[in-house]
Amino acid sequence: MRMFNKKSILILAILFNGAVFSQSVYVPLEFQAAYEDGTRSLDGKPGADYWQNHSDYKISAKLDPVTGMLTGSASIIYYNSSPDTLDKLVLRLYPNIYKRDAMRDFPFKSDDDQNGMILTSISAGKKNYDPKTDTSLENTGTNLVIKNIAVNPGKQITLSVNWEFKIPHENGIRMGQYDSAVFFIAYWYPQIAVYDDIDGWDMTEYTGNAEFYNDFNNYEVKITVPNNYCVWAAGELQNPEELFIPRILSKYAEANTSFKTVNIISKQDNSSGTPVFNTTAETNTWHFTAKGIPDFTFGTAANYLWDGRLSDAGGKKVFVSAAYKPASIAFYEVCEIAAKTVEIASKDLPGIMFPYPKITVFDGKGGMESPMMVNMNSGEQRIWTVHTVVHEVMHTYFPFYMGINERKYAWMDEGWTQMLSEYIQYEIDKSIDFRARNVTRYLDYAGQYDEIPMMYPSNQIRGEMYGNHAYFRPANAYNIMRDFMGDASFKKALQEFMKRWNGRHPTPYDFFFTFEDVSDDDLGWFYEPWFFKQGFPDLAIDSVIAKDDLLKMALTKEGDLPIPIALTVKFKDGSIKRAYRTASVWKNEDEESVWIEMETESKPVLIELGSQYIPDADSTNNYWYFK
Image (cartoon, rainbow, N blue to C red):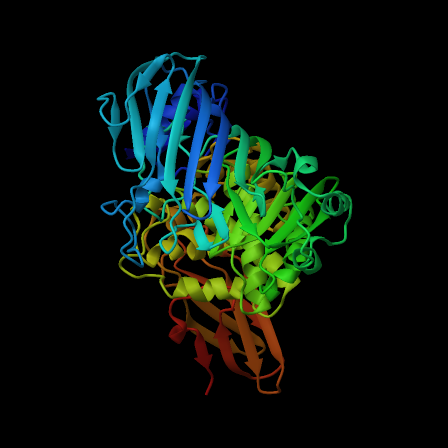
């Protein structure tokens, strides 16, 4: 790996149609190879030879709430669009994280013994494997490598897998059994890992922190549960007429055409003693389909309430719903909050039409996103319910619309979601200004020894610093970029980046170079310190000259990270004047200080540097008092 110098930039610029990119960012060899191979371009666009693989999944699953056992079978067609002949396949067996001896990023709350995912049969192509003894199968933990196969470029292979595992109760990570009749099921089926143009097979083990990196796949899923259970899932329900009694079916149809919330299943429905689902058999099978999504999850429960309505996503109708316990008072408003989030996000920032036909918020545990599904519990205060709903729904754009490798670049997923959510959260509930809060949270970690640069792989970071790495530092970086670029230019660049890489797998360099391409500006002066280096933000008032009716103030950048300058000058007569410069004032790295002049009509008393929206690690040098 090496730093591109000006000569190599010039050569590559000529080779790639005159593209120009930052002259100071560090580009590892595997990324340089992608530019040379034509899978990616130096202007941030997918290359002429860009490719990615995908799968078609047909899954049948049965959940027994009494035992907590899930049994499943899947037929998977994997399409190799790469130029490489694949001599192995990698299957993710996520439930293996629950084995007693599994690697995990955090301890379990109890000592429950789990067997992980038990494969009862597996075949690939024409070959059948014994999951217990076949030497062509290599289990590395949460990954299963199927060796000694050949999938040629442009060809496909069919896998058949049967499995079972017990749904975790106390130890569930992003999923689990929450009481005797409430389950949220994620990370639950054998999933083919991503094979891409940067790393080849993604062999990252699932240890708890690392989240999504999936291809865009097609799903047909049938889920069998007892006849008093409802199922909410990614994808669209194909057989409501078989499942609902006429009264519920009528309200379900109404909710799919109404811009006001409809109580599809109400308290009265659950307390009437009349079944709301088909009871001609002991179980019902719920049938869902979805195209071009990166994962499939579902929630199921007995005696849940269900609200639904449409949201206007700017020319597109999105079905929004909430499923919850009657005792979850905060959830009574969740459908409205989610609908408002879809509407604002589609029309304002990012201003990209909500990509899915539906989104459901399920009353489960924690706060976790998946395509068309949110798993969260009620907040004790409205603001925290708003916060979680908005944040998890906004994940629809990052990573699902974009296909980001969150395992390596969580700041491209959580960071963008954190930043974009701030404005929607504040519009819905002004109890907390989350933009200001993200500044405060970032300053809890800024400049510490173990604060790792954002370009360091996320799956290598442990403990509390992961939150700063993934959420707080990037959210501040994006807001500072928006500030110096201007709202219109920033939005244009963000939308272009999203349009270029929707349904694909963008890397940080695709983001960096797209923003430079759209803004026609070299942003390396900002990228290098904020994304590639350790450091902290700190400005100081260095010196002040007050003469006649002119006030001259010298500001120095004591820290390594460029941030805006916000000055407030208070005068003896009670008046106040302010001055502001965006972070681009530090674009010239040779500048050791910046002078700001201000005309005065009264004697200055105090100068204050800073703002609640500007992170500054040392506030002791932010005041200048006049004698």
